[in-house]
Image (cartoon, rainbow, N blue to C red; front, side, top):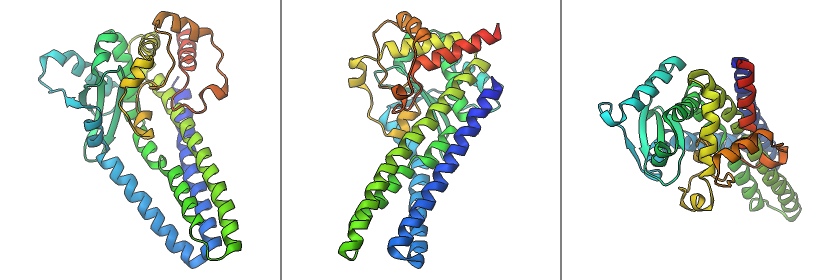
Length: 315
């Protein structure tokens, strides 16, 4: 389990580095061709500084924006009503080798959980109010072990580092359309701009794939640090998704692509309303690559089957 998790972490990290390097090479080449070497260096420096500034600002202050968006309220350390929850999170954090994050309750109408961090706000984990009524404490423990796995592996930092790259390429393409000095160059610029827009879409798909990998090794983390983690995570996922019908989607909080990636379960998952039936269906379901290529999370069936394999190996 540790080896698979390590391989997935390395793959996601290398994927993020590759995206950054390829994007930089493409932007340098395009600006150099249309504006010259000297101007390309200036523009590249300006663009990199801009994207770095936006990335850093978003990373630093996103916890406060998420607090407003998800109506988060902190759980005091001396709150006797949630002493069991605080003890659970402290124990998993200690076993995982990370500092215990601050705990928040999200006053929204759907069951989910997420972890996030920044140098200013520190590490945080949030549980939405309906999740307490939906899951047993054992199932909640597995979900929290999953979320704390994201903090352990610094997934938030990775997402914010690469999440804006497709948008950057798109805006470079948009700028090319209005920057040409003559008709011939304008035609070339338009073609290159269309190619860059297509490339930004491809990069978005790659980032979604990286996020699916980080969700997988967070699931593995839950099987290591939560008692009977594989089984409890399976039932927790089935319950959460079974609640995720059309009514749920209408009540969900609107969030950016990056913040929606932080959730335990994809907020657009399909549901037939029966957790037990879903679980049995997913155990036997064959999922094509195209079925989840546009999703920020692995298809639930893939998660269930991966956890099923872990259960069999542990016997």
